[in-house]
Length: 345
Image (cartoon, rainbow, N blue to C red; front, top):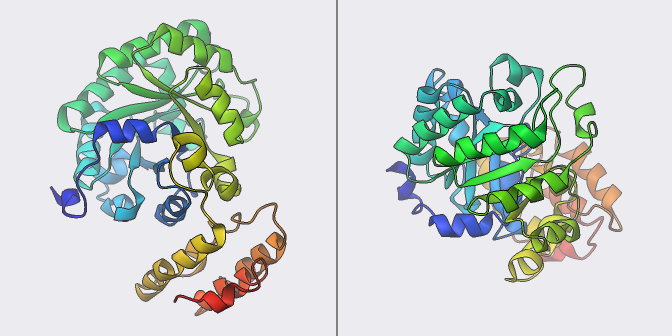
């Protein structure tokens, strides 16, 4: 197996432990450069790819979408699709590439996803989702998981969600992440759907009580580790954080290992920047551009003195032709004036 040449597949129990806290899959954000940065901030947290569509891999041959660094593990591949056989083929490709988990997207409400008959619209087809899960499980040894909503449109989540969970559990899904807000597929934009309708955390907690054998993570509106800990203390198995983990990665991920897992120490964002420099060098040597990496680093010092100077120096400097690590060190001097003396390029 090709993926095993870079590392052995993580033991399922290790991935389950990592799922105590995870960073949500976010299109255009959680690419491989973002995940490399996030791994430097937290050694424990479970990371997810952007959603990759099964047709892109199976019909389009876009296997480059599976590229990732060994350092990213534990890392999960999120797939989009609705054809059981095509998803099985895509899952097999993901497992061969070395991913520790294959996740099926049943939560994205965007028009683009709806037109492909996958994402949140699959909440209306629990039977099809169960077929997809079963087909993927037949061909991979890693966990097949689902990320879903509590319901869509006029569905009654109290009725729909238990049936949905029962069907996917019977198909072999043992871990599920539930976004605690109903997806509204008509009449609301995805941006509006971030706030409307209201979140229903209580329903997710009731699902854990009704399905004690399922590993259930909660997602939606959680912006701090303190909030995450409340859900964990109340009995949920995991918490998934999205936008806050991206925009304030130090606040969320640098504290995650000691606070959520009881291991390690708080990561120092200055040290993380210095550790990014060799990675940046390799990317540039391969023909990449600096801003492809540094756009994910803008929030590292959010809320700290010099954060505005850091963001401005990176934003303006990284897009220039031939921009290199010196741009990053210049930006770092705005928040850590003595950092230049510690150059480790």
